Amino acid sequence: MKNIYLIISREYLERVRKKSFIVVTLLMPLLMIGLMIAPTLMMLYSGSDLKRIAVIDRSGIVASELVSSAEVEFVREEQLTKDEACRIYNNDSDIFGVLYIGSDIESRDSVQLITNSSSSLMLEENIAGQISAIVEREKLRRYNIDNLETILAEVETHIDLSTYVNDGTGDETTMESTSSGVSYILGIALGMLLYMVIILYGQMVLTSVVEEKASRVIDVMVTSCSPFALMMGKILGIAAVALTQIAIWAALIISASKFLLPSLLLADGAAAGDMMLSAAMGTLGNTGYLASLFAYVALFLIGGFLLYASLYAAAGSAVDSVQDGQQFNSVIMLPIILSMIIMMSVFNDPNSPLAFWASIVPLTSPIVMITRIPFGIPGWEIALSVVLLYATFVATTWLASKVFRVGIFMHGKRPSWSDLWQWVRMK
Image (cartoon, rainbow, N blue to C red; front, side, top):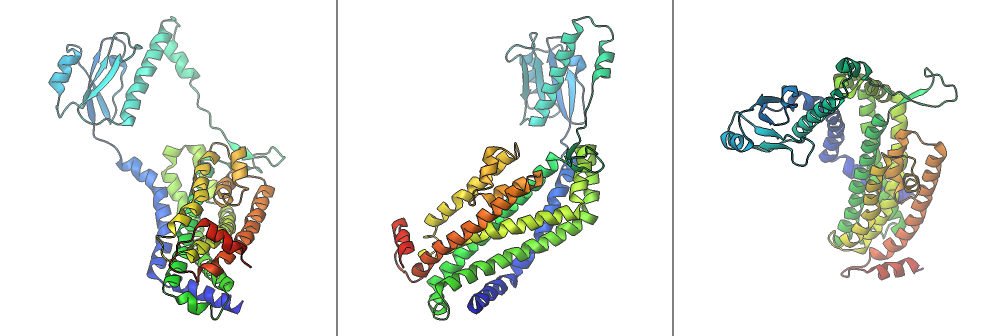
């Protein structure tokens, strides 16, 4: 244990004293805050220049109903044909394009937008949405319903759906308010965080072992400690670096949730909607909830990192260069990439069979489970996932140590998978 502690101290201090570690640790929360501010800034500064569109309406029902805005202005051109308008307005700096509407508005290619430069999805959806609404209103008018516009205005209704976690009382003052939108944001942020940490620090384990093996430093170190102690010291030392970074991020983000996030969310309130804004402020302003999330992050980060780090350490010991390690690295990364793919399906249904089993199977559970947790899942599922994850870590560490103790002394030959299996079976 003394040797393991010495190796942990060396690996830990060597990395946390680097300027790059300090810079990344301090900049990451700023980046996350920047991502929160980004929607507001995009709304303020993403407005495009006014686009003037010449409208040729052969149906006689659309042009007069089109509504101009700050982004688009509709100009009626009833005297021109489509060919004439395209010829006249080609490369015209004042006219962005020509909107042609045929007499049979519902037939194929009856509505055409012919532009002088690249169009945008928002512009096309704006025009298509307006035309669809105009045609629908015209169809309703054919039923000769008196005061149709008044009736449509009166029946138009917007519903704000409030969601709560059932506590058995049915009283909204005691039940916890939830929001799938906020859970989605938290889930994807936490999932991506674990993905980056496992990949980044796992690769760090592989690189460290390869470099020390190539320089024959390991040959000297194993004269004072066992290969197992050396492997565990490296893994736990780098794990401590990752936990230190997560702890600093947690402290900064939890502090920001009390003082900075409420004002940022209020700035986004007009775009997000009152119910979404209320749920976001309630969730992100709850420091206890955020602290529990980071506790889960630490729990699954430790388990996931230790599991994959043992595999990375074994792969590093079996090769003489980082390039040679890619054949093993690609295999190790497959479950991690699969976790990211499955993570996307969690947002559609966090309780689907695929999401459940992927959050239980240890190779995918760290990322998938941490993505499900913000949606509120039973505690027994989290406990089962943790137990299986750490049990699998013990098994993979035992297997990796058998590869590691042989691999660190092998030079000049790239081992095959059958060679690794023979190393595992060696007594």
